[in-house]
Image (cartoon, rainbow, N blue to C red; front, side):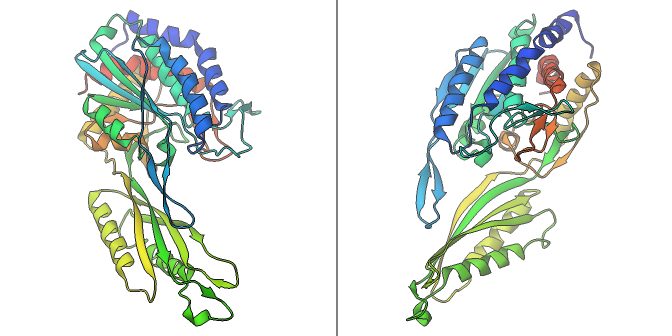
Length: 401
């Protein structure tokens, strides 16, 4: 593999556009687009519709169905979502690349973390600058430059930008699966790991809610008639936590217990909320059997209901993945970039794409760190670096299919 003159033209176009690639991501970060902040998500979506209009395909909106949520009272409700954005370019081309990203962040509307600042060490510090508004800017820069390549006609691509990745991609999951089935290779723009590495294998993940209902009673006048749902939820939480260490690679994080009642009442509702991570399908089946056992245990006067699901299957580093990563490493070497990888316990849209049979690299976004915290940051020089990696890789990666 070598770089031809037309490849160098793509790289030079990206390098000359470096300031804009960074600046638009910084501007996007000033829009709060927390996963549950619909007004902010809509503002971000409108800005992105304008940004993707530079590509040859006209952007389209894909409405997403509402997803189920369990309220603090244990009742089932709906979470609505803004539409996803799709751009399809040259669907008839022999090589098809699927590129995905998300425009939601983990920062709620009430967050005080609102804008990007430059740290003394030069890093950009702000909400979503790494995860993944910087990544979306990198993706678009790579595609804009690739359109200059004389071989671009041989490569088609589908872009999907979703509003719900940070809450499990439950609504966008079917769209991701559909796109995956139409492609030969996938590129997703999550930030690189903290040391700049790509994520190779990934665990799977699921979010669950166990609703416990008991019997309310006055704590002084009729305590014995009550059935305490909080105690029931706490015991269930302890049982779930006790599963840790029983199966290699499986971790269960009991994150919260909601519910309760005034201090003079026996509480009649509580919800134990937890996340699971697992290394493979067999471990997922083991986990599901154990949770079913815990839920089915008799509990005097309490009624227990399980909600939730595994939202992302595990993503092993199989032969197809290894071939793809090898191609990325080879392209990186041509650019003077040392591409390394290692396993990650985190999950992303790459899990979804893999589950539908699409080999993919899912950490092609910027280099940074401390995501999901108010220390989130990205290194500004990595915007051009990573856009060049994708821009130079479009042809070679397509050929790995």
